[in-house]
Figure 1 (tube, rainbow, N blue to C red):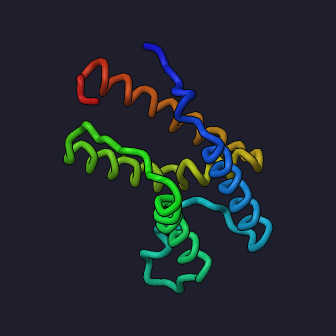
Figure 2: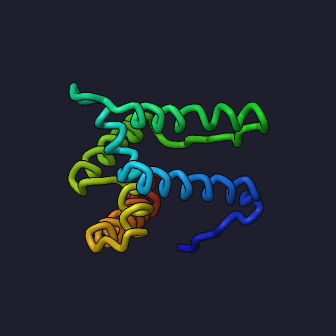
Figure 3: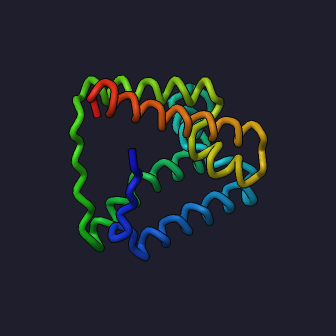
Length: 145
């Protein structure tokens, strides 16, 4: 098994996107003391408690950003070559995992590791390891991916 990086797909706009994500994370943490964990922010919008405006704006920004980008440049083609039932099961497992791990890749991987949180480091290593194992089994053992 080899991992290949398509360096031609990396563009300066990719760097800008990463920088914007980092800046938004820092602003959210330093500005109002909140972690930019997308699953937690999104799930809070679904609960019948008081929803804060920053949560709505954060999710709205995630939805609007690709639309604005698409107005300036063509969006990349996305090709999904797996079945819809497999995607649904995968999505449910990711949702279960974020609840089980008390956070998602953005919350633990970006924010938690930046704060040197041992729990986030353990969570990041765990979901990366299980992601690698899942892709290996799906692709090489079961032939699904």
